[in-house]
Length: 302
Image 1 (cartoon, helix red, strand yellow):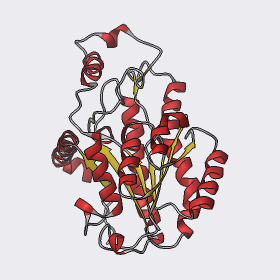
Image 2: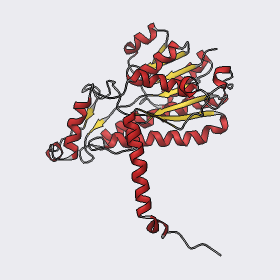
Image 3: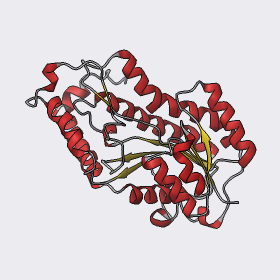
Image 4: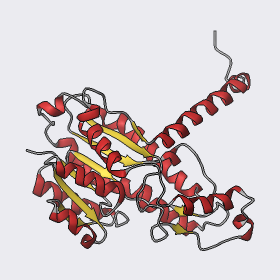
């Protein structure tokens, strides 16, 4: 039996590229989108397509999981790719806009994972030679969420997006620990800037409130806003190459053969630079404040 993928937000970006990569390998792909007409090309390529809005109530996700497992028997790779960037300073964004961003980027992934895990925990172990050769050996499945280089660095005018991506990385780290006894792997994919439609004006959501103080190009926020527009279409990363690596890593094949599933899949030299700089910066803070940090401990009892 070929492995089964369930992918949210497969109409564009990494979701679509991962679906196509898995299909080329002969895997079974269940691809979803809010509007299934936008993934008609995936259906033509052999994917099973379903309508699914990750912001729907939990009952929708549970009904969908029941249908998927009734038809396919299992889900080996659960990929949560839905997400968007809310552009706006912390002072400008409304509580409703922040909640909507978290609802798609974080809560949508949680609702989907919660609906699928009861079935994944009970499904038979993956047991074929290709899987056993890599990715840490035989498993029941893998759950993947999408973080970002924003999981590591706050950014002017993209603070809410970074907040959601930090949450997605924390979600994956927690799942990796909680699901280990059930032989289910978990990881977060943290791409840098990839050439997708993510930064297109049609995909980017901006806060309704706009304050002149933050439009000034002399401020970090003003420069960041213009930087997002200038970056669109000029991103460093190739999404097809990135998707191939993701599929290799989740399946323990190709470049990942013989390696354990990492809790973080960092993609792109720009993301690598952000992560390394954050590590170095954090170590400098810890070194500078070491004595102050340790001074707050209670005395050791004799």
